[in-house]
Image (cartoon, rainbow, N blue to C red; front, side, top):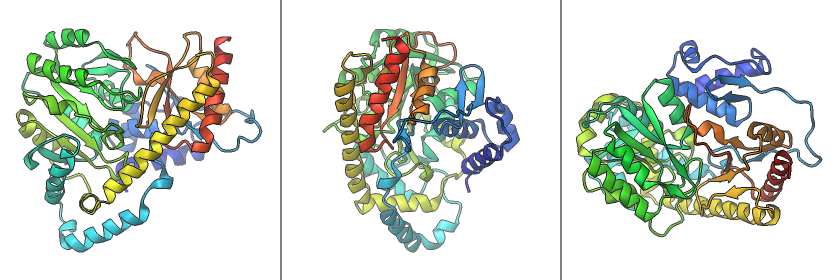
Length: 447
């Protein structure tokens, strides 16, 4: 069992056994890392999962706490939670038999090779397969530049720690942005600054000012189906970001974790416009298959390649998982499943918009425009108490995520919103869930 699952299981066991009382503060991230003998990032992932299942909650700049138990029953007929919080793929559509077939094929094909430590860069045949696979996403790279990682998170941690050719140390992130990575950067004490990104995009003039300051080694961005906004950069924005990177010698770390769920006919990532080798392209396989696979691919530009390899240093991804993924891609099953899950998620996104059209008649909630992916931003009036709203919805068995955790500590220009995920929201629950959100938001704002 991998360390993350072991730590999460132990935490859940302690909570179930009552070792932590309602409202009690949990050990700090660093204290928990020492307690469980693991990395800070592992604790952050475990705490994030417990928070998403509403076992605990976080208070910015304070820590993590056990959820207070409530005796108030939910409304009649509401025995099943409407899950707008979980970011994991829908378990009901996972192709178990297909992937089991690929595992068996991988064992037959590679036999004894699977019992070696393997290459730290990843299974060679998978990396060659990914050359053509990534080309479908307009990412053209030689096999030497493709490195298999233990999910995108590992690549992000390596990039945060390693030195860059521009000699700078500070990291620029979008605000709001990927919560687990933001917590990791802060826990490690790495210098980080934020630039505002809204549903309307990013201010390119402000971005140029930041780049021109000479402070940043890289800019971390999710150009497609952003977490938590759900929106994508326009072609003009992606071209401009690539141009600014070369002009000011700031590297771009492009997290394209939602690449498989793109509904557009053509979406050229930032790396496709990069003429100066300033973009690290990251692709995850978690959203299309399952998070436990823990496989990602990093396409690293030549100037960073040697250092990235040195910091990765060892084999840490299952050769069997890599071999099974290679079979899954090459036999066409990956593409088939991608098409199926993309259509299903697009249908759920559309159902959310239709429910808002029915229930949000006063325009109380502003929603971001997303055609696919899994996330939507529900922007709320400033008069709403966000944490109280989340709690009231939980009492009605509507699970949502507060937007507060998607900002770095001390960042002031915050929007008040909830992140809505349709990944595990059943189609027949969406209308009920949206209606409840609008009702509680109206109640909280005094409308």
